[in-house]
Length: 474
Image 1 (cartoon, one colour):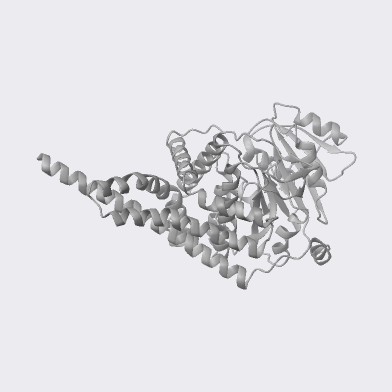
Image 2 (tube, rainbow, N blue to C red):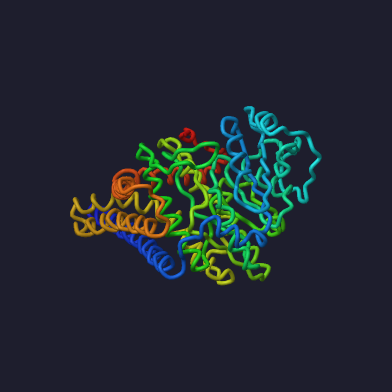
């Protein structure tokens, strides 16, 4: 091939790469816009502001199904006592707390034994779903509904499975030990189970606790973090829970219930064998496998989402922790798609195979590299005269300006429905973060997701820890 032919082929390749990046990003944003419109319609026509805790209690005190709250804990010595006190104080007619000490290296177990006057008990499992050894079980003399399970380290999925095996209630709630459930969060999440026997899982909205004031494991005052990284994540969480999850639940395509808080029918989890141990994205994989299990067995089922806030969680306050978290999320999504690749585009799995999983492919396989590459290729192609400069402007519009519109639109939904932002000043701060995140933070996040892709292809199964700064005490 001549030099001129080589230049022509190279130029044509660059143009096609630029065009492909534009199409992928535009398609992904169109999907997000559709989700925003669906969520807005749901809020306007279907979802009404939730009843107060007192109303829920009077309505469901005699109907509420007993719940086991399972809290896997690893090296939580500094906060475990306050977290358990908060769980014991939850407003729910009948619930037990199962804390699973997952081989902590610090004095997590000792703090529990001393603080709650615990004695060694011979609790037995209904089903042994974990892969590691149970070292001991303990009950509290002061709180009959508190059980502590001590086991060898096996990571969160294994610890959750151990707790599920000890649970004897119809419903189980899996939470992070450092998450804070709203006092009436269990009632709100359990409400759909009261009138729908087909329901097998419920997720709820989760908010960022950074900047909030916490006392004795309960939320005392809602605030906004001073650091910009947690503020950016507030915007992300609003998009994820009030736009994506609400829309997907309404269209019966919900594939993710956050690992920070999820309510499940215990019998279904036991029958499925609990969480998988060979993935770092156990929460996404579990829900996708639930869909597969129920459809393979031709059972009617439903997975729901409660848009009311049920839980508060600490987000990474620095970019290093964000890198570990987002890379792990990305790796977990790819592992889930690999495990269930036979479902993608398969009519046998209905909307999950034809809509939900292709959406994950668009969002987690095609989207990150296409957008990051587009930021480099389109301006370069325009400067070299290979592409109409308006194409580069259009890419900037669909990736940045469009992103601002989606974020601000979700913030409007939050203010109309939940009204949990404490002041107009804080609302303005979040609104500014919704705009500023598109200039740097978003691109850094794409790079972190590429790190997750590299971890997936290297089959790196090490758990990337996320440093925690702790909550602000009253």
